[in-house]
Amino acid sequence: MAGTRRKPGLLGPQVEGYRVWLEQRGYTAETIRNMLTDLGRVGRWLEDTGLTVGQLDEEWMAQFRSARHEAGQRRIPGPRAMAPLLTYLREIGITTAEQPPATPLETLLQQYRAWMIRDRGLAAATVLRYSNTARRFLGEQATIGDAFTPAALTGTDVNAFLLRECDRVSAGSAKGRVAELRSLLRFLYLQGITASRLGSAVPAIGGWRLASVPPTMTAADVQSILDGCDRSTPVGIRDYAIMILVARLGLRSIEVTRLELHDVDWRAGELIIRGKAGRQDRLPLPVEVGEALVAYLSSGRIPQGERRLFLTCRAPRRPIRADLVGDVVERACHRVSLPAVGPHRLRHAVAGELLRRGAGLSAISQILRHQDLATTALYAKVDLASLRQVAQPWPAGIR
Image 1 (cartoon, rainbow, N blue to C red):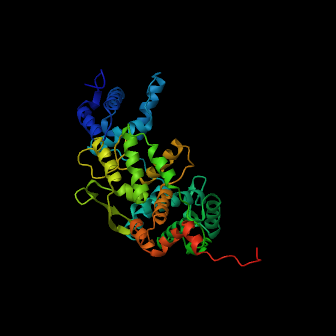
Image 2 (spheres, rainbow, N blue to C red; image 1 turned 60 degrees about the vertical axis):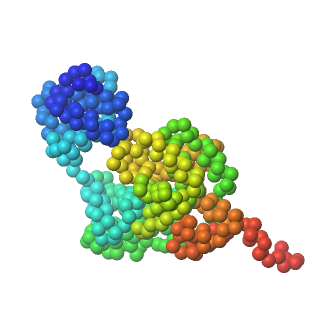
Image 3 (spheres, helix red, strand yellow; image 1 turned 90 degrees about the vertical axis):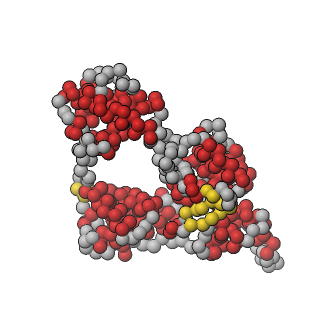
C-alpha cells in the first residue's frame, strides 16, 4: 500500500477509495500519503482494541490520539486532521456512528436557519449573517453557566447586547444588528419560546441618508494594489482575478463568489452577474478583466465537474466564501503599504473614477447595479471638482 509501509488493519479495504476521494478534493500527493498513513494507524489501533470500523466517531478518535500520546509517539494528528477520514467513512455508509448530539443552542440555531430559508426565503449569505448574530446574542444573553434559557430573555437583555455592539461597530453595521435581532426575536415569539414580542424592545439606530461622504480611493492607489499582486503563483493569479473584477467592474464580494464558469460569455464579451434578490445582470467584459480570467483558468486549478469560478487554493477544494474577497483585498493593501480597506472601498473607487471621467449618475447606477437611483446619488458628493463649479459664493462680510 502506498502511503504507509505497514498493513492498514481493519481499514485496508478503504485505502483506494479514500485515496480517490482525497484526490477529487484537491489534496496534494504528499498530503494524501500522510493521510493514508493515518488511516493505517487507525485501522491497526481498531484491530488491537477489538473495536469495529462502524464504532468510529469523534470520541473514539480522541481515544486513538490519547493512545498515541501515551505511547510516546511524536506525530499525533489533531481533530481536524482526522475529520476527513470520518467524513469519508460516513459518506460510504461504513461508519454509522452519528455526530455528537447537538447542544440546545445548536438545535435552536438549526431551527432558526430552517425558518429563515423556508418561511422567509432569505439568501444563503443573509442566513449566515443572521445566524452568526443569533449565536452571539443567545450565547451571551440566554446562557447562564450551563443553563440555556431563551424563554427568560427580556428587553433589558436585548438592549444590553445592542449597546455592546454599538460600541464596537459603525452606525451602518449597528443598523444591521437591529434587523438581525428583530428577525431572531420574531422567530422566538412565533415558535412560542418567548411570551412577548421582544422585537419591539429593539431601538432604532440614529443615522441619516446622504449625511456623509462615501470613502473612496484614488485610481493610482487602486492600480498600486493590483500591481502588488504576485502573479507568479497560483494564489496570486487567483487573487489578481478576484481584485480586478472588484476594481474594474465594481462587483460586490458575494457577486464574485457566485460567479460560475458559464457566466463568462467569451463570444459576446459579457459577464453574467448574480446580484441581490436573485437579480441577474450582464456587464461588458473588459480586455484587462478577460485576460486575468484567462490566466486564472489556464492555471488548471479547477477540478473537472466544478461549476464555481473561484475556489480555495488549499484542499479540500471548495467555492470561496464572501469574506475571502475581503481578506484578499486586505492582504494586497499590506503588500504595498497602504491602509487596509475592504472590497467595497474599491467599488466606491469605480464610481468616483467614472464621475471624474464625466459619466452620468444613470450610467454609474447601471454599472453598479443599483435598484434605486437615489443610492447612486450618494457618489455625486465625491466629485468635489464639479461641486466647486456650482457652489454659491459666501456672502461678503460673513465668516
